Image 1 (cartoon, protein in one colour):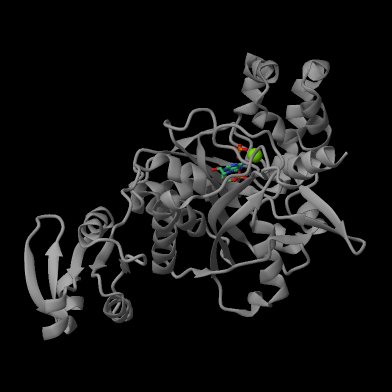
Image 2 (spheres, helix red, strand yellow):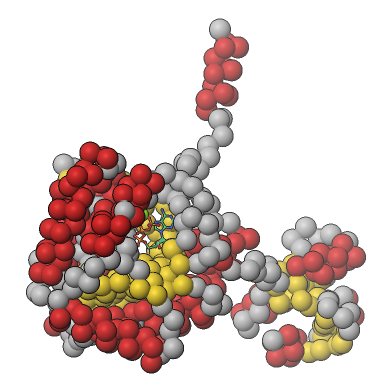
Length: 425
Ligand code: ATP
Ligand code: MG
């Protein structure tokens, strides 16, 4: 009996706990340099364009996403992490546009001079099938700009995305754009689309059958082969690719294209690009990489002029984008681990610990051996982890100096302690 109890205790109490499978991941110290690299670049690039960072809560009222993302979307229908607490329905944010818009309204940012330019980074949560390039907790960096209806804002967004990607060394990417028109011209297009697809209704996938009623534009986004085949039929394709946007939307789109040309940003128009979220109007865009396999989009964005009003604010035009940070990192070359500036080598621990403290205060990254190993062992360790060994033998302690060994070329010089900062930097 006791043996059984002991067995059960150790088996269950001590069972190893691992990350939630599937779709979540540790970001380990070995990867952190890449994360800091893309995060620092975001701060630089967005700041240069006058954007301020905003951080909104990771969970919000479920209603925010139902209204803000749209209840005909996959995100709201299938992918949200929703839970009850004190009889309130809460949801882990699946994206950050709705949260930023809520904050913009709640904090009265419409009273600030337009444009209000915000950027963010952080984790998002979607319950979808994990696969290469798709996790359940992933990270996005993105921006939202409020108050500008002119096409210059659409182009600012696209060019900022491209600048950021270039800044982190990604140059070989395809920019795709499309115009979804406005609610008025889109309505006519939807009617035509439904008419031409009516005979095929029973052949569409169950999702598309629902989309047909609720949000026919999203039909074009379907990844199911049988549906895609139907959308390739000549008479269907003719409607899909027809020029449906009204003259105002047309002029807006032409201006976007003209400015992109002026900036030398290469793009292609993809008539099937409708984006997953309900709130877009006029310009939508995606940036794709050929080196990512089937989950090839690194950036998605567009104009969303009705969202602020839909979430209870004043009529405010807006445009934004979001990028998947894991996908960005997977496109970067692996970064070499950063070495420490210096490793203090000494068998006098009292002196070593003091010197290490002083050097860290002066801004250097420094470590030392806490177990007082043999001098040669310490030197070996230094050459693995640092650029310089700072040697503190009895002679040096006596005359108040240190020996500094450049571990790349083994050159060694004697120096005063107060010179260490400038010498090593
Ligand atoms: P997809 O068509 O790939 O599902 P989406 O339209 O759902 O994309 P958005 O909501 O526009 O994606 O998000 C913007 C970017 O965030 C995507 O282009 C992608 O890089 C990244 N992203 C979206 N979902 C995930 C996920 N589950 N795991 C990792 N990255 C993601
Ligand atoms: Mg998705």
